[in-house]
Length: 133
Image (cartoon, rainbow, N blue to C red; front, side, top):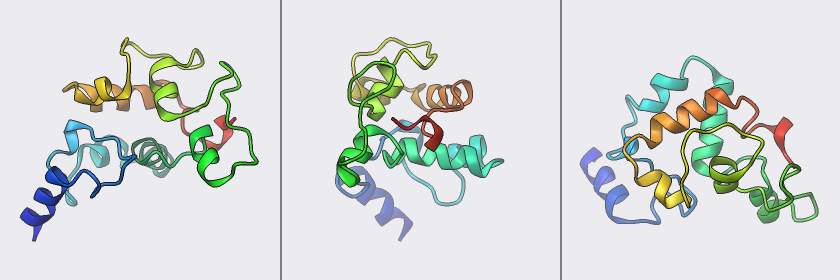
């Protein structure tokens, strides 16, 4: 059953959902031990923020556009749609140590998981309700 699940994850792009941030650290996925549990399992708040970022189900502009279209969607700092890519790669509000063109370039790097974990630790307001547009 686990082998079937892993194969489905690798071959069917829609299986994980279209907004799932496909970090190499999750390939193959594991329900028993994961890098995310090791990095964020100590804190429910940190794990919730991490899950919001990976699933693109965070209180940010792109989420609001889909589910609450009458609420603000623009980044208060930059004036553009606040989506996950904007937060991770472009927004002046957050500190980061990489320069990439897009989210796809971010996830293809072997160090993307560690960079995301570091980004979350360095930017404690990212992907929180207090940081919503």
